[in-house]
Image (cartoon, rainbow, N blue to C red):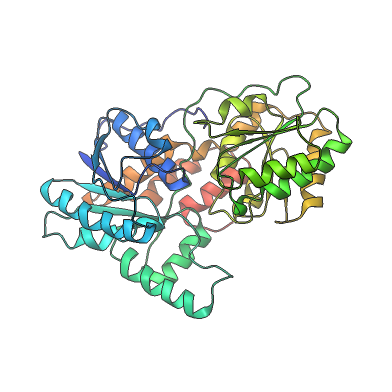
Length: 413
């Protein structure tokens, strides 16, 4: 969530007249938030955007711009995620058969069943499909047999897309190997929205912020234990955790048991963490596993340093610039406590310098990147060639910007 100048498009640059986005619902999820941000941005470009949703329900619904049309399929809440995805695919096909939609954005792995269903439409009715790989496709905790099954599913579903995108070049390489396609585009995660310029850390603030669903994989229990160590060393330190979930009771018991009542706050669900970031000294991500960790981008865009477990391949790159913060091993309470204490013991860096590190991840840039991919079938230059030219004109910047440049030009760092 940062402010950058939107990419300038020349008057001759064509854009699709209509774009559909398929979404299960408006749950709290990274793919859902990115899809909503892109829908809002494309609608602001005077493109007719239709959001086909399995259920018009969920906390992120309030973030959608009024100019985006919603087609609510009204699917049963009793459907589990797998059945919901396939039911969404079947019904979305029926919707798009009745409408002439030029392009369709499929926002992540869970939505892949939509792809072959839409491609089964009669010639001339199937939209140009841009599909995203939003989370790792190879996991070390999968057995060989399970990975073989996943690869088969991936080829069967994702392989039918006109354009495949990933968040990084390593993920693009894995995708190419599994699907057997010649080309996969890399688009940096368009997770940042306009929420105003970053502001300096309030004088004397020692508040540590974290955010996410209160579920075991987020590691909030370990964060609270690590904060217990920090609190013993710094009387001003406070911990604020934004989010709601089934682990609230267990976390409240842990807070009370460690004598941290009054120093740790569980806010519950909040529509935006930006007001809390503005009061914080730093942000912590304590997860055991994340697809990317988009919340780290939000924190840096707000001008706040980060401490993160190495829960995503992106973490070490995001912290490779010394001013950004620190990364630590997952499930390591001592390392997490040490990193938080170290940052609190030093003055905060310039907030604008931190925000500039993540400018390539703004939704306006990602929105234009995807439009370029949707235009590619009309004979205009592909995304890689266009952005490679843009990046050559950019001044040398941090490793984080270099990560985006490497992905956009198809070269690993």
